[in-house]
Structures are given as structure tokens and as C-alpha cells.
Length: 110
Image 1 (cartoon, rainbow, N blue to C red):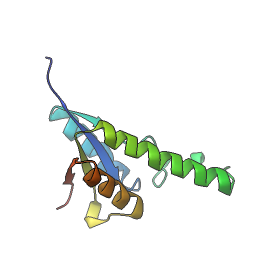
Image 2: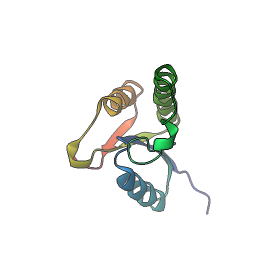
Image 3: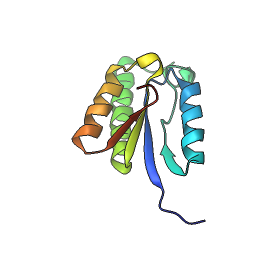
Image 4: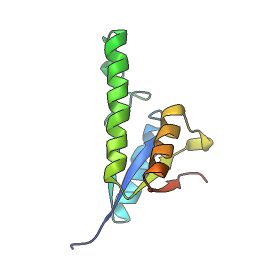
């Protein structure tokens, strides 16, 4: 089957790894191309941060935030993983960026 698939970037706190994985599977099975986070710094993947000095840590977090905005650029819409209505500072900035760039925005929890 060849189709015209919508591209969706997942946004939200990486503490919600299970919800990210569930949304990724569901949205994929609905016929979407799903772009997700590269690592789950708040719910696993702790080894990524373990031996970083403060400067490298800050630069890495800035790079990951910028990368995620590039992922939003590639998408038709974003899907916000807002478990219990939680939206942190980084996710809030991603939502604002998506609005500025005219992307559709959907939420796990209205």
C-alpha cells in the first residue's frame, strides 16, 4: 500500500515513556508517520547524563531542544503527551513553536 501519510511529532515530558510508546504505536497503526524523542532522560537513559560536566550537560540539553523543534518542522502536526494535564517548560515552548509555524496540535488529554 502506498499512501499519503500524515507526519506527527510527539511532544511531552520524557518521564512519560510508557505513554510515548503507546501513542507511537497507536498513531502508527492509524496510518501516520510518527517522530518521537531520541532518548528518555527523565525515565531511563540516565547513563546519558551521568558523567557530563555542567557545561556539556547544558549544551546537550540545548541541542536536544533544538533538534526537537526541527522534528516539529518536519511534521504536519504535534501530539502532546500531557499525562494528567502536565505540560513542562520545554513542552510548552514546543507547543508555542508549533503554533508559530502553523502546525496542528492535538493532546493526549484535552
